[in-house]
Amino acid sequence: YMMDFRGLDSDFIREYCEDVLKAKQHIDKIVEISALFEQFNFDNPPFPLFVQFETSTACQANCLMCPHDQMQRCGKASWSQIQKIIKEAIPTAQETCPFLMQEPFLEPRLIAILANIKQNNSQCKTTLYSNMGAAKWEQLKQIVDSDLLDTLAVSFYAPNRELHEKHQKGVDYDTVIANLQDLRLYRDSQGKH
Image 1 (cartoon, rainbow, N blue to C red):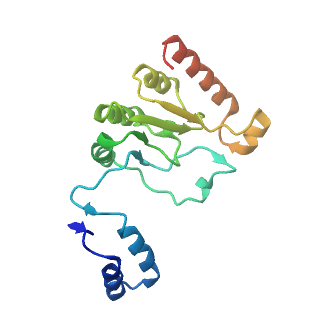
Image 2: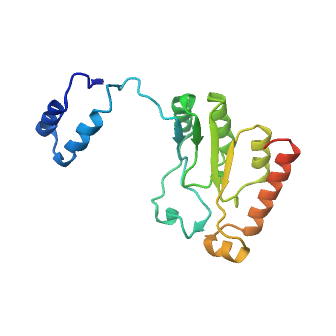
Image 3: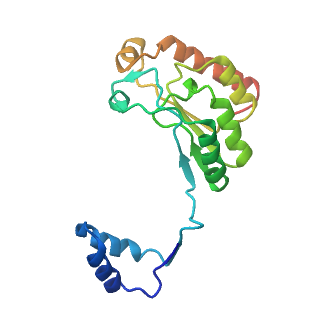
């Protein structure tokens, strides 16, 4: 499993690729990339410093700028799959965003996922992207009380109700404003920033 490029010059790698590859148009890139590595160990690969994963594709919004409605819906990741990702990737990560194209506040295991991340690496910065339309007060309170989140990026694309409803269909403007106000007031009352 050890691929060691030391001692292999680009001519050798090119010749090998020409002998075995069907997609020969990639040979130049393979030679270029192989020169970047002295040694790569498949048994103990370097893990990324930023980890992003998805537990489902659930989202209540239909935003104009988002391709979510064109995506193929996937199933829901099992708790054991999520734990495996966290156990293997988070200990060396500096930052993670455990949700990509889904609305994290629709994930019933949100608090457990964030807590599991912090238990595996308390220094790992956690980030959520949310439209805040599905957030429930108890979730927001738990996140603040337990210091589970380092960054909350809010998807809010309009300065008023009319434009918001046009650009972010399915996300109630008043709910978002109320959630943001409640979160800020509670966070500030707890002395957390």
